[in-house]
Amino acid sequence: MTDRPQPDESSRPIQLSSEAALDALCADADRVLAEFYTDGCGICSSMEPVLGNLARQLDIAVAQVNPRDDPALVERFDVRSVPLFVLFVDGEPVARLADGFVPGERLESWVREHS
Image (cartoon, rainbow, N blue to C red; front, side, top):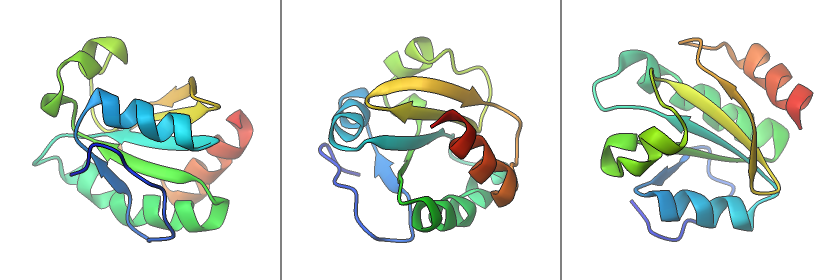
């Protein structure tokens, strides 16, 4: 995990370890899709390839963050279930989605609708 993530062209989401790392990524990228997950969540794990595809298709920074690594995230983003997707545009959270597994086409449509 990293403290100062940099968006790249990798097909894997950026792994974040703290609220500060998430804030840094949001400051550096125009659009960020963050998945809040927990270890052992099968649905969360199954979203990783979907998120990688989305990053390539939409040229968007995609990150995964475990709020248990930094409990302030739970309160700040009112994390009640995982996976929770939060879309940031220009550093601000503009939409959230907590519907379990979300197929790629639906997630892409949701991102486009809110950005």
